[in-house]
Amino acid sequence: MAGFRLKMATQLGEKIAAEFGFHQFPVDAFDIARQKEISVQAKPADVKGVSGAIIFANDKVTIIYSNEYENAGFEHFSLGHELGHYFLPGHPEEIIAMGGAHMSRADFTQNTSIELEADHFASGLLMPTALTRKFLSNNQVGLDSILKLADEAGCSCTAAAIRAAECSAYPLALVRLPEAIDP
Ligand SMILES: [Zn+2]
Image (cartoon, rainbow, N blue to C red):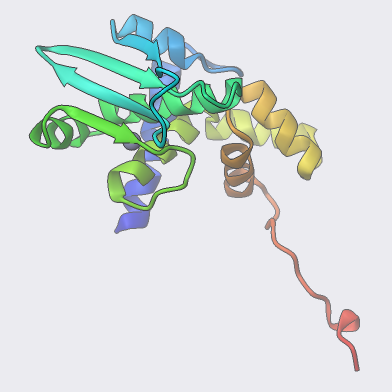
């Protein structure tokens, strides 16, 4: 059941990317926020321990994204994560019920349901399946191509690695062959 919800979150991210007219890399999450009249601010430097936040107040939505690592990909992914809390069914209601403000720890570091769903949304938004598969078919899967995917899609390396594994035609796992086993 949890896996199904995460898959739906990825698919919703892809759908939003297409709806806002993005059919190639990079999908610009800042532009999507602008089109939805969401106020986007960089996180104040003295706020530590969170990657970003979303605040629902008086019918206005404010997103705060992390720029503390000076890593454009991570900033973009953190914004995609917050947009997940805006677009995913049930998220605004849950956050408003908790007082209207939600602090995030993006990039697949948390395992609570709304955090994981928002990470999967961001992953689908910034790396839609068709675009990611096309990229992987033109680039041999490996560390170099994962770094290149992160660069082209504008997302964190962790997110790119996870997405590359999901979209790869080949299983990305180390397999020990029988002849390599010591007698
Ligand atoms: Zn979050």
